[in-house]
Length: 160
Image (tube, rainbow, N blue to C red):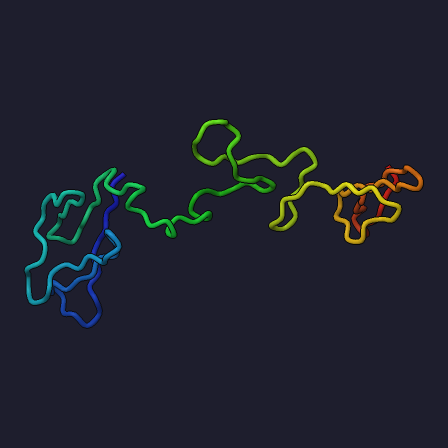
């Protein structure tokens, strides 16, 4: 798909002037048509990766002209990559290299806020001090296994 860019006239510059700024960046520099005065500027035609038309008011970037090597790393953000479904993580399930995939969280792993964790397991005579829902504790004095559980109104150790 080609990208078409139209110019806009900078406020204060009289119409028809060649000092129009294009609303695009190309090779990390603003493309500016003309250096001043009436007329001048860029003639219509194929300029390599860009085709200029309609009296230099439409610039179309050719298909496949913008490659990944021409994109600044910081210009690609997670928000621009994809809409990720809830309770998923990005990774690669396949053993070969390739694009990231949405992976389902399973096997006791949980997502809370921005943290991905697996339940902790503690074997001790006293309960852990800062448990998280899903953690397990075996009381070494009694041999009883407990799971830290939230019933919707409070969290507590529940005998398993």
